[in-house]
Image 1 (tube, rainbow, N blue to C red):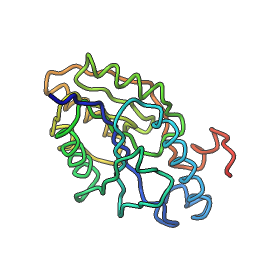
Image 2 (spheres, helix red, strand yellow):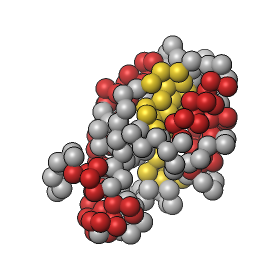
Image 3 (tube, rainbow, N blue to C red):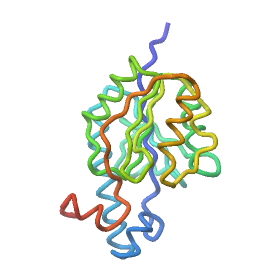
Image 4 (cartoon, one colour):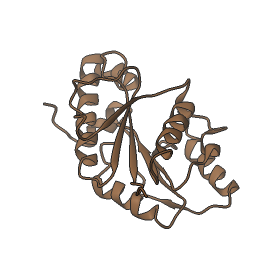
Length: 200
């Protein structure tokens, strides 16, 4: 008999200048935007390493075997499908075949911590769903005890309606959910400046 383990999915974009943090690059330029994204990737990597969970890294365009995400600690995959909702759904379905519960984060949240993610896993022991609301109307974390495709259907991705529509989808299932603290993603220059990080 195998024992299933909690899993965390980390969605990242391949770090290519001009293709990451484009809204940020509009004011700080593509070189600094890339620097900032690399800092966010490092932060994300540091906060997930202490977790007692399987870590699954999903790249946007191609799997990088020689980057700073060691394969001794991260299972590497390629995002599949057109559109964020399809890509997330396929990633969840893939990992739910081997483990549960499963939660997903991106790499845009400088204020996300190991403790917050650990709280999400703990709450998934009693709640079917856990969501981390973002200040822009989306979410920075979604966790599920079981696969629920309706969480990825009819959602206006990359808008301020994502959280509202996702919670409505959960309520339509007559299921309970737990909300984590509201955090801010780094999308614009002012988002970055409030953290006061020093770039290497």
